[in-house]
Amino acid sequence: MQSGRQHLIAYLPEYNHFQSYRVDYLSNVKLEEPTPRFDELREELDNMKSKMWGVSTRRKRYGQEILEHVEFVVKVADNEEHIVRRLEREKRIGQVEKIDNNTYRFTADVYDTSEMVPWIRTFICRITDVHFSDVIVDDDKSQVSVIGKNIVRLNGMLKKTFAPLKKCNVYMISQGASFVNISFVVDREELAEVVQDLHDHLFDQAEELETF
Image (tube, rainbow, N blue to C red; front, side):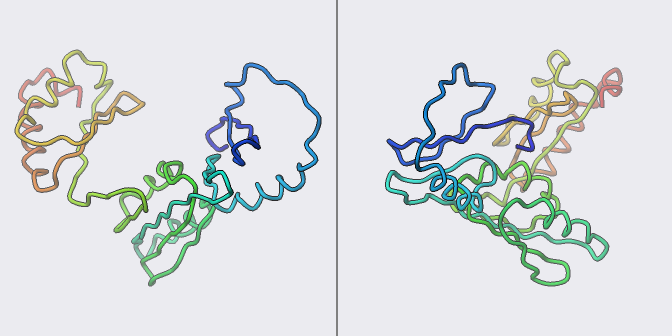
């Protein structure tokens, strides 16, 4: 796996299912005789790889696969051929279709679309349309980020950040792993008011300007 984690893929005959297990979570391993179906099961797993983004597999007991469909459209400028090359190079499965000179569509049928989300997010500023078969997408929302030195470790900063937002709906809150930002999602129609209220509230004291 590109994340650095190692997984063991095992076949569970009682469920007719392939299951992944993180190697660092295994506490005991018992060696048994090789299964006479190894070559058959290995070929079956190889055929399933065209629908695996990571290690997840999904199918019912009698072999019926459960797939999710994902597609998104990317808009690129005339000098951004590197974005198209990234799509082609980094996709593990799926297809990239050229719609016109500046528009490309990626499509795939996979067992678990959630494994793709971190990769898809790297194109977020260029994505004009996205669809998941099992997800409802709200396209009338906006993300707001408050960025500053060690911001999430400052006493009272979360309370101070959200104090001026009592009148609006906050749909999601995310803390950056680097401790320099707090992000959240609001209604797009309230974006300008939210940004102005935050600016007025966070920059009202001179001693706090060094944080941002």
